[in-house]
Length: 381
Image (cartoon, rainbow, N blue to C red; front, top):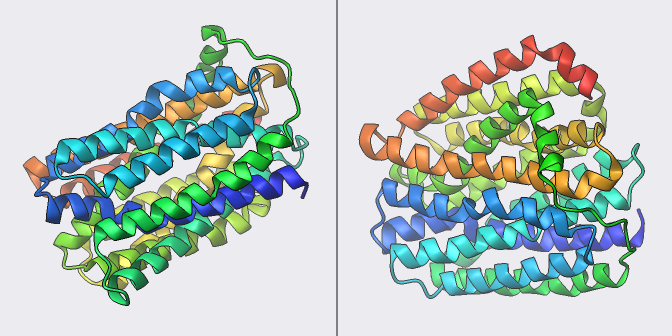
């Protein structure tokens, strides 16, 4: 592994640790301390993810024109500011505003990181390196909840203090992103063009899979902790459940290179596991049942994103890869935004368990479509 990949992976694990410490607690903080309803939680999730619909495509156009390490550093600065301000929030609209900042920051983090990895890899090693980077991020997301639960229980820390500590962990990653910027190799300029974005439309089946999985993932991040809390899970228990989620994702990502040999079967299995985990969540009452559900979904959410990106990157020209990565992340952002607002509104008007049943049904449909379109997906991959 070359120096650039080492540095970007260290950056990923630090950012992931910060996310793991505070992300699962944001819905509980908003619900219990600020009086947020499920509809409010949906709006908070929408505010968090909606910038990711619009900004990545423009960031993608910048990737070949500016130092990707500096773009990554800018994302970390914005992200650190948003988490610190979250510790000062006194109302639901303030939480929405600060989570929107997090969405902007994420758009300046993930696309340049993927571009740095793609350009530092050979076509043969790219999927392994992107999966490894995702694995480092998820490892941090696995460690973070353990640190959070220790601070909540062992140190009797408040949510606001936990957010401040998460800010420090996140800000420390800028040391390594600056090192990445110093290792920057100039690349051919990629011009913003809608024709480049339109290349994404050549992959309608991949888009459908991506939007479903991103929607479900958005619900798990923005709404699920509050649902767990309503099912009598304490903040510490919720952190432990997200640790289990992270362990499952890390183990799966470690097998990504082997699973890539059967990429279409793995994608069908992933969507089925997401659906099964959501259905189990609908019925679950105990931490063991929820733990099994989180472990199953951890497998489903792990490789689906690097695999869908790899299918697309194999079919586009290298000089347009920056724009394509931006368009891919924008598609991901659409799903990310739809999931929380849809599940929040369904929870508010139909019961807080119903979204899991609805998303289960959608997942079965997506799995069936993926199996039917297996040949076309295999040709693309």
